[in-house]
Image (tube, rainbow, N blue to C red; front, side, top):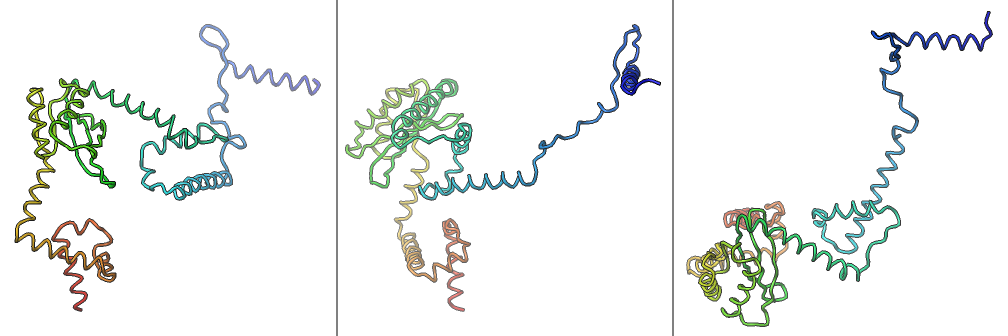
Length: 298
């Protein structure tokens, strides 16, 4: 009888011999054991416990609450979370790890503002290749801001999208045809004449003169007035008719009455479901007024 250690060693050798098989060449090869056909058992800590999941949820909630408090305290519009750079900023902050301190006011309004403007300029320049291939439309939009400044926005449209070029403040000068012609000519030369096939501006008299001068100087450019501006002018002329003017005054009086009295305003919001755009059409407004009047009569 063999000693226990020798017997155990002999047994291990026998099992290793059983696991080996002979190939056609007479060489020995190892065959897979039954245990290799099953997935290994999970090691301790490989699967998150309920406590870890709960702690993770609480940490996310604290982070979300911190962002919400910052937006509320700084009076940032809640719609800002829908902008494309919102999630990108969160990714960048989390990649920095703990201990990161954000830039101060002077860095944001100075160095980083200049960097952002340079990136936008590079992005605008990337559209030039599309303008060369398909051509583009130069659009000018004149409007008055809340500070009563007269501004002109210049935009370029192409199949890839619309690009905002710049805004010019013309509050301190008279918008004569000569001044506008010089301004439009600079923008046309910046975009390049061979890339522009169409121009859209307001239908004012000074704009019409400028566009005729540009088409005479650059025959490849075609000009057309803004359709929205034309429709606006048409509706203004229609509103001056006596039959229409009386209806507009009557509707204006009803609107003033409703918004100057609490209970009629409450009833209007009740019947419209709190939607302001419902009263945009005359039919909807008449229906709402009919419901309010019916309520008072009852």
